[in-house]
Image 1 (cartoon, rainbow, N blue to C red):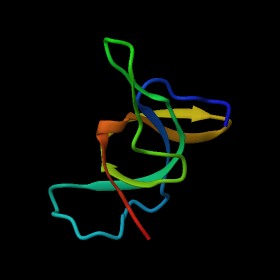
Image 2 (image 1 turned 90 degrees about the horizontal axis):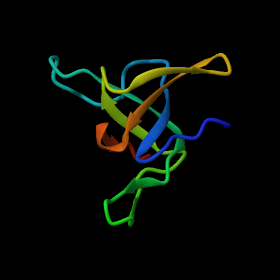
Image 3 (image 1 turned 45 degrees about the vertical axis):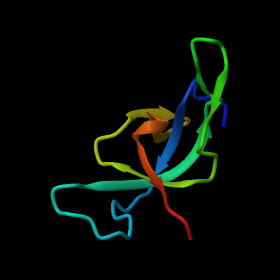
Length: 91
């Protein structure tokens, strides 16, 4: 991947099917995907780096309208900040 997110952003390849396999309330629509690239983390005002909790390969859950669509090498991805990710799906 030659597209590297900056700061605390992640690039996500969204799952084809919109279902995350979880039971959610009808008014809250969730989506899931896999982190394909991640930035180094958030730099604080004093210059220290707060590292990312997410790593490439994490299967994540996020809100249906989270992130910005990005097209790269003919594929569509979502770019979003780490706090927009609701959780990591295990298993």
